[in-house]
Image (tube, rainbow, N blue to C red; front, side):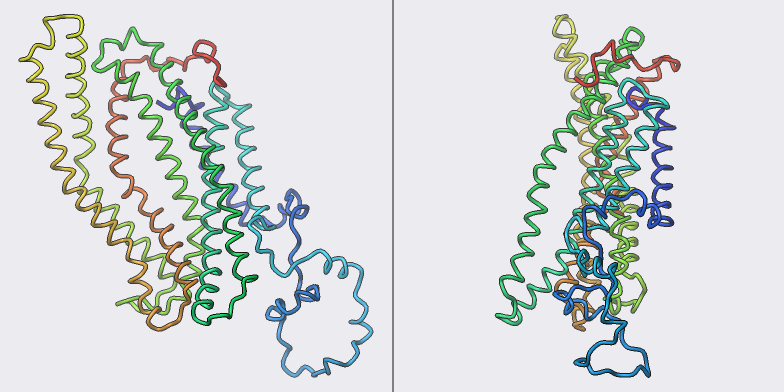
Length: 465
């Protein structure tokens, strides 16, 4: 299932996790020195001004950022001429004033450019390592293609973080506009709308191209698995459901694993990006119902709610993988008999068909029963969990300690973090289906010699086709 497509799967996936941890630690512990050497943001984005270097046209914005005078300092007449020392700024200071801004609020500001550039270079280094270490025939799709999916997933998480920040500022302006008619000018309001459309509209094209790439990625994986199995077709052709394993289960397995894998990666990256945001927003929460004030309260609430839902659905759905596996067995038996009946008039007689279909019916009725109480638990949990942020913020809303912008930010960030924590709860039915497919393919692969190497690309067509 994996070795037909990925080079040495255990080492490949293990090295990916280790490399992500190492690069994350390097970014956190030595990011500034590394940034000064390899970053390109200094060429693409303006620098952030020091308080003494604020341009005159931005001085009002920067006044709040200036340090207060120390106690006991002599007061001076603001209209008096400056001293000789302060009146003659250095050439370096003049240059800085001309090329810096108080705050860069662009979507691609200096900090974001550096972060994206670092992630991109780290991914390129990982791909280059596997190109020289254990490159296989499917390298460009299995290694480079997986890396591209990782970068695409990361970009969507960062887009969600930007929208979260945008919502906080926009809804504060909206609250002011609705509460005090005429207090917000069009020049202050419309830039928020233009910024949002400028970010989201290009993302539509990106998502279309990503869906196209995903389809080809899944089919290449299916092609690798099919080629691998067909090498040993003579040895496995007589096993139960061999045709279904090669023709159907390879596609379903590749599709589900790709979908679950990117969803799981999205959940991990979302936690990395949004947990600090949610922890910071927790400072605006005065107290929790029944518990009072708790540091990082929103993070703990999201964790508890997700852990409860995951445990609940795992308990109520524990029998579903086995039932799905049995369901595929009875379906395969019925399909096999019908296929034989196409060529042999003695097969697929009414009596044998009724018996086989009765087994299918019995298994489906049993599945419907077990899915009924599972869906009851799943829908009840997901519906209630959606209103947890509102209940959590109730004391702060009643106390009037948060603005509409903060409420929107909390709602968005809490939803992102809670959804990530709830990955297994939300994807449980898909995981159940994947487990049944995995069991079938694992049993099918037991008939393939363990020392068989993946089929060479020259025998199955160019990988780039």
